[in-house]
Amino acid sequence: MPAQTKEEFYVRRLFDDDVPVFVDATKYVRQDLPYPLSAKKALKATCGVRTDNEVLAFSLRNYTGKQAEREVEHVESTVGGRVTAQNQLRLRMPRRTLHGLNETARALAVVLGDEVITELDGDLYVLTLTRAGNEGTLALAGKLTRSEGGFVRSEVSDADTEFELPVAGVRLRIFLRSPVRDRIIAYGFSGYLTRKPGEMETVTRATALAVNSILGLATFRMLSQLDHVDVPAVPRGNAVRQRKPAEQVTFTVPALLFTDDGTPAARGRVAAEIDLDQVDPVTGGLQLHVTAGDQLEWNPAVTDTMKFEVYERVLTETIGAMLHSAVGIDTVRDLAYDIMLGDLGAEGIARLRAATTDLPGLAAKPNQAEVRSAQPATGVPAA
Image (tube, rainbow, N blue to C red):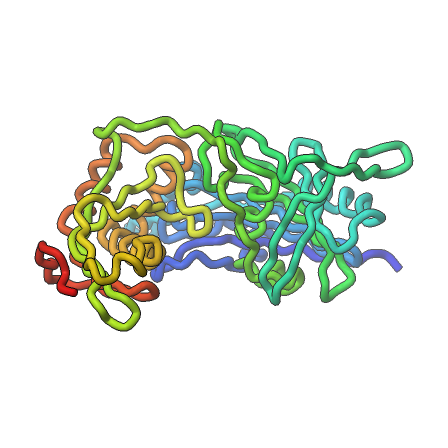
C-alpha cells in the first residue's frame, strides 16, 4: 500500500494579547496567497509539516524582529479611490527540507530507540530523554558515526559538547520516536537561540531550546508527549566582555523583607542589574541579576536564620515583571533580539535606564512578593 502523505503549514504570530500562537496557514500555501499580518513584527516563526505512514517531519524557522521586517512586505492598493495597506508574507512549503528530514529519519530508524538524536553540522549526537509526566530532561549519552554497514555508536568523555554559535543562526535536526503513535518525529530548527553569535553553546542546551520553540504547536506537543524540556545552565567558561559602568544598567529597588511568619527581616534597597549580554534562556525576556547590595539593613534577631538567597528568586521574578510592564512587551522583545544578536546600542540602554527609574517598592516573603507604592523608610528593622 503506497504511503499516504499530508502537508500542513503554520505561522507563529502575535495577536492583540501579545501571546505568540501557531495559526494554520495551509490554505495560503496551497492557493499561493499572501498571508496577512497586523504588523511586520507579529511574525515569530513559520513551520512546515509533512506526515506519512512512518515519519512526521517538522521544519521550523524562527524570525528575529529584523528578519521579520525584511520578510514581510507592506503592500498598498487602491480600490474605488480608497487606499488600503496590508502587511503580507509570502509562504513557501519547505519541501526539500522536509524530504531530507524524512530520509534521515528512515535511515536512523534502526538505531533510534527511546533516546533523542540531534544532528549538528553533520555530527550525530545521542541524548537520553528522561520523562517526568510531560516534562523532559536531556543528557548527552554518545555519538553516532555513519559507516558502510549503518551507524556505529561511541561514548563521549565529556558531560556535554560545546560549539560556537554561528552568525547566520543555528541549524539543528532532531529525531525521536512518538511514545503514543508508531511514528518517528523528525524536526528541523533554523534560527537563533538565547545566546549571541560567537558565544559557546552546548548540544544539550541547544536541543532543549529548539524543542521548546515548537511545543506551542499542538501536533508536536501531543505526539511527543512533552510540554517542556528542561534547559541546562549556561556552560561555564563562556567569557562575556566586561562592560564599562557607562554601558551597564544597574538600579536599586526599595524593599521590605519578612520571614514566612511576618517577622521583619530587612529593609532598604536591593540592587539589580539587567544582563545586556544574554536573555532569559527560558522566556527569551530580559534577564535580571538581583543582589543584596550595600543598602539593605537586616534585623539582628533573624540574621542567623535568614539569608538574602531565600528571597532572590521571588525578587527577581517580581522586579522583572515590573520592568517588563514599564518597558512594554513589544519593546522588551525588540531589546531581547538586540541583546541576542549583540546589536544593543546606546538608545536601547537609555530606554532601559529610564524604565528602571523610580520603580515602586516591594514587600517580600521567601515565596511571595507584592508591589507597594510607598517607599520603605531607612533604618534598621525592629526586632
